Length: 272
Image (cartoon, rainbow, N blue to C red; front, side, top):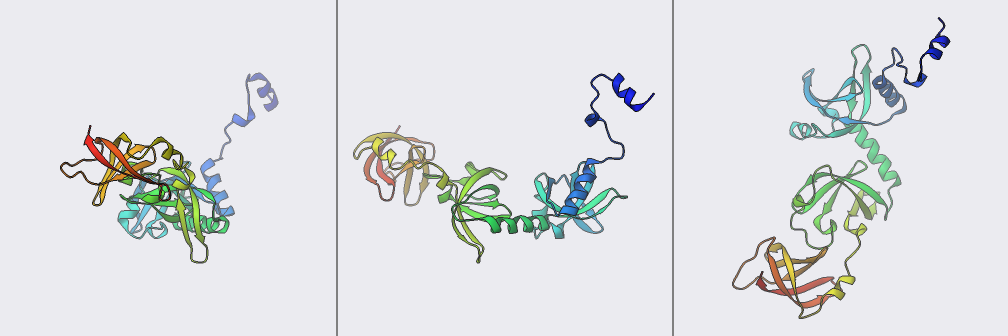
């Protein structure tokens, strides 16, 4: 029976769905990436020692590959191990078809991405940032291979007591480039710049000597922050005979609204 006749006798036959013997999608990706200098991305699924070198394990299709620590872009084994379970970008350095494995470099991929980002990045541009580390008052984010610090003041309007309460490693969000010096390779970014400012509209909802219910959003040496609405936190003096903590409901009397500084000042009359 001819091949053509077989096709006629199989209802629903689709040649595109026919498995091609000898074709391996993983190796096709690896060959293409090596030949065209492309970046691949996969989860780092393991850490092993190969030829006395600590290596991260990644897979492309069914093909297992290794990223030696010296090609990882991180300086110590502890930081390298923290990549375990995370998606990592890499470029193919070499491959062994008979051994069914390949060697890859995360550092080469990061340098490639960084070079491309510096090339097209402009002041005022909006770019996706991915959180790499979180501290109380500072995030380190990745924008196209470039690590950039994002201070708490540029995260959101209002008072943010602790960024660890609102951000996690791996979070994605858009940021705006505020300042850029390509020669010195310096860039300043802001997430807040892409949010709608509550000012000056919020000033219409509050009046001097008015009293409002708010929630304590932060306690610092020089005073207490009380949240009145999203992005609007009044700065007040410490209560003389009592203490408050984050989350407390309080009654706040407005003392002054400073339009220039976009700040409300007041005092707590009592706890709720």
